[in-house]
Amino acid sequence: MADDAPHRAGHVAIVGRPSVGKSTLLNALVGARISITSKKPQTTRHRITGILTEPGAQFVFVDTPGFQTRHRSRLNERLNRTVRDALAGVDAIVVVTDAARITEEDRQVVDLLPRNVPAIAAANKIDALADKRTLLPRIAELAGLRDFAAIVPISAERGTDLDALKRAIAEQLPQGPALYPDDDVTDRDERFLAAEFIREKIFRQLGDEVPYGTAVAIDSFDHDGGLRRIHATVYVDKASQRAILVGEGGGRMKAIATQARQEMEALFGGKVFLEVWVRVKRGWAQSDAMLKRLGY
Image (cartoon, rainbow, N blue to C red; front, side):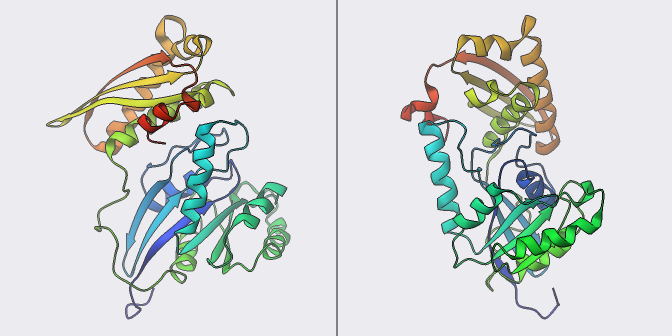
């Protein structure tokens, strides 16, 4: 932005079908791992806010859960409501698609977007295109879905053309002062991030079904000098899921906890003592009391 341009600040929703790289894009834009990522679809369950402050503009990015269609429960009803609420309160929307193809799911996502909010299309994963000439028809196809304010080919994984994307977004933000302090990167606290890191490792280590039947609660979080002592419980729906999650001799859970602890130490900038228990709580995803305790 030009030095004499007015300062801009606003909220930007990041939306798209599962597995197009929404959380990867948020982390790349903010420059910190605040949103968990996994190759499995529908990993994100919470509205995650990432804050990027640059000269002349502050972006408050909102990484929303994908619309949940795979598992019907009270939990997923709440997640879908979170998406709708997020879209209703933003100044701009970034629609992430795969640069290789436009699917029916992409079209459905675009159809759900409010028409009175400017939208930018981010055609992601251009680094994976074997033939870059295929990008032009994809851009034309995107242009036919909606009157986008801009269409920007990017690679969230490699950081390609993210500056162009930020410029396109900034043009749609209202003029005004920053909404958060300059050094903030998220409005989520460390307690929340700790639970998300544990959940990410569960998604990455286990098969298709078990991660969707788990939830993580932080029982205690004590900050003593440079050490954080964290006690967490992973809730599962069935005893068979607990056995898979714990693993032989507790090995799988130990590996999950170790990887999560290392991620926490990198983000928090200090030593972490982490203890994780696994407990069976049948029907947790249908229990309003449990969902409230888990922050949904």
